[in-house]
Length: 362
Ligand SMILES: NC(=O)c1ccc[n+]([C@@H]2O[C@H](COP(=O)([O-])OP(=O)(O)OC[C@H]3O[C@@H](n4cnc5c(N)ncnc54)[C@H](OP(=O)(O)O)[C@@H]3O)[C@@H](O)[C@H]2O)c1
Image 1 (cartoon, rainbow, N blue to C red):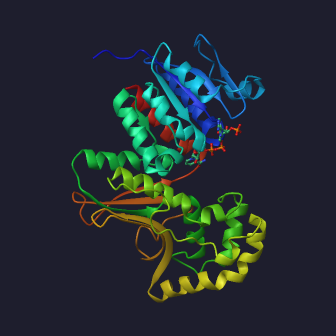
Image 2 (tube, protein in one colour):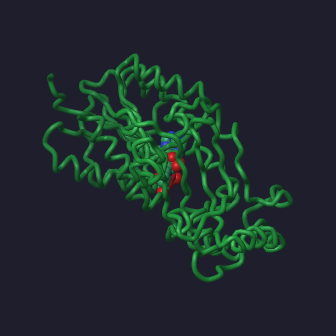
C-alpha cells in the first residue's frame, strides 16, 4: 500500500492545550522526516494565518505571530473548501470547546478532512450529531479521534476500543472522571484523618485553580456526565444526551440562582451540614464518599453521583486530582483493568491529541 509522504495540519484554538500541542507538533515534525508534517492553517476565534497556496507556516513561535495577525478566520464553509482542496491529506485539530465547531465536523469529514480533538462537545451532545460524525467518516474514509475528550491524555478511549475490538466483553466501567471532584473528595473525606469542611475545600480548590471560575460548573456533574455519555456510546449504548440519565448535582437547590460564583462560595457554608452527614454515614460503615460515574452495560444503566467505597478500594485511595477508570470485562474477571493518573493539564491533554495525530498519519 502506498504511504502518504506529507500530511497537512490545520489547528483551531491556541489556548492552554493548543499551545502545548504546538510544542509537541514542532518536536514531532522536527524528529520525523516521513510523513512530513506541514502546518497550513491556524486560528483563534478572531485571528488566523494561512496561505492561499498552502505553503507551510513556521510552527516555532506561531502563537506569537498569530496574536499579531490582522487576518480574521474565514467562515466555516470557506475553511472546509480550502482544506478539502489541499494538495495532501489534512488533519484538522480542534483545540477549542466550541459547540459550533463541533457541529461542523460532519461537513469536514464528508469532504475527507480528518479530525482530532480534546473537545467533548461533538461526542456528548445529541445522538444525531454523533451519528452524523461517524457516518460521514465511514463514507469518506476520513478518520476521527478524540482520546483527550475523556481523562485528558490517559488512554481511556483507546483502551475501551481495544477491549471491544479484540473481542472482550465490557460489562462495567466505573471511575472518578473529574480532576476537580477527585481533589475535592480526597481532601474532604481522606482515607486517613478527618478532612476539612466542605465549603472550605471548595473555596480552596477554587483558589488553587482546580475549579472553573464558577465552581458550580464543576459541582453540577455535567462535565462527568458528558464523559460518561462518550464512553457509554463507544460501549454500544445509544445514550441520547448527558441529561438523559441520573446525574447528582452537588449544588444546593437554594444556591442554584446565585448571581455569581463568589456569592455561591459565600453562602455555601450554610449547607455544610448536608455534606457532613453524607461523610459521617460513610464513615460509620468504615467507608469514604467519592463522586463517581458508572456504566453498567448489561442493564444499560448510566449514572453519576456520590457513592461509598471501602478505604482500601482503588477509587478511595486516589491522590490529588488524579482520575481513575476501571474496566470490568469477561477477560479481566473480578480484577478490573485500571487506568489512573492526571486527568487534566495542558501537557497531558496535548499528549492525547498528539497521539491521535500519530494514529491518523500512519
Ligand atoms: N485544559 C485541560 O486540562 C483539558 C483537559 C481535557 C480536555 N480539555 C479540552 O481541550 C479543549 C481546549 O481547552 P483549553 O484549556 O486549551 O481551552 P482555552 O485555554 O480556553 O483555549 C481555547 C482556545 O480555543 C479558541 N476558540 C474558542 N472558540 C473558538 C471558535 N469558535 N473559533 C476559533 N477558536 C476558538 C480560543 O480562542 P479565543 O481566545 O480567541 O477565544 C482559545 O485559543 C477544550 O475542549 C477542553 O474541554 C482540556
